[in-house]
Amino acid sequence: MSGHVVADVLAELESVRGGRALALLADRLDATHAYALYECLRGRERTERIDLVLFTSGGDVDATRRIALLLREHADRLTVLVPDHAESAGTLLCLAADELVLGPMAQLGPIDPHVSAAGEQAAGPGRISAEDIRLLPRMAGEWFGLDQKADQVHIFSAVSQRLFPTTLSTFYRADRNIRRAARELIALQRPGLGEEGRTRVVDELVSGYDSHGHAITRAEIARLGLRVTMPSPREEELMWRCAEPLREWHTRSDENGGLLGMVADAEGFRARRLFTAPTPDQPPRPYWEFDHPGGERTC
Image (cartoon, rainbow, N blue to C red; front, side):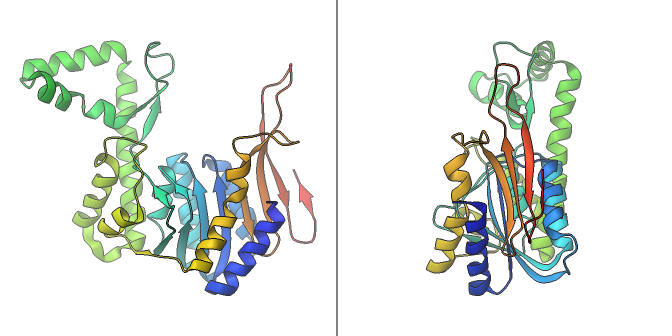
C-alpha cells in the first residue's frame, strides 16, 4: 500500500470518527520522527481532536516524550488508535492520549529502558534492560540465599568488574528518566489519578513483567486503569489498513532499499523514512522523503 492510499484510508477514518486523522508508523521512534510530525502539523490551526494511528516496536524515550507533547500542543484531545504493535516507547506515547482505541491485535509492552553494553562484556548481550541489573540482588537472594549485606557488597563488586561504574549509573539514570516521563505523560490521560496512582501504573509498566517482549493486551491495559475503548468493525478495518505499509515493507527491500517509517495525514502530506540499499562502498543509510499537498517534494 502506498502512502497515497494511506491518505485515502485516513480520510475515511476522519469521516467515520470526526477528528483529524494522522498515521505514525515507525520501526523505531527517534528525534527525526518528531521533525517529520512537526512538518505535518506546522501551519495548521489547533484542532479539537487528533486521532493518531500508531504502529511501532519502540524507540528513544526522550524523542517519544517530545512527540507526545507536540501532539498535545496541536489538539484539545488526543486519541491513539493501535491496530497492532505499540511496544516499549510506543506504549509510553500511548500514556499521553486521552483515550486509547485498541484493536483485537493491539499489543503494548513493558517500558523498562535498555542500555547498550557494546564493548563492556564481549560474551553478553549488546543491550541490557535496567531491570536485569536492578533485579540481580533479588535473584541472588531467592535463588542462592545470598541476602546478607556482605553478599550484596560482593555482588555489587562483581557487577562493577564486568561493567564500568558509570555504565551502572547510566542504567540508574535511564530508569529514573523513563519513570519521570511516564508519570508526566500519564497525568495528561488521568489527571485525577493522583501521584500514588500514577506511580502504581508506571511501576507495573516498568517492573511488572518478566520479559520486555511481554504482549500487554487491551484487557491488561484496561485493568491498569487506562482509558481503553474498542473500535467499531469499520474503525478496526481502517486502523489495520493504515499499518499495512510497515508490515509489508519493514522486513524487505524495495527499489529505495526499504521502509523504516511514515508520517501521513488525510490531506496528502506524506513523509517516508527510507534506507538506501547497501553497496560495496556504502552501508545502508536512512533518509527522509517528503510529499507535501500539491506535489511539492523535498528529500
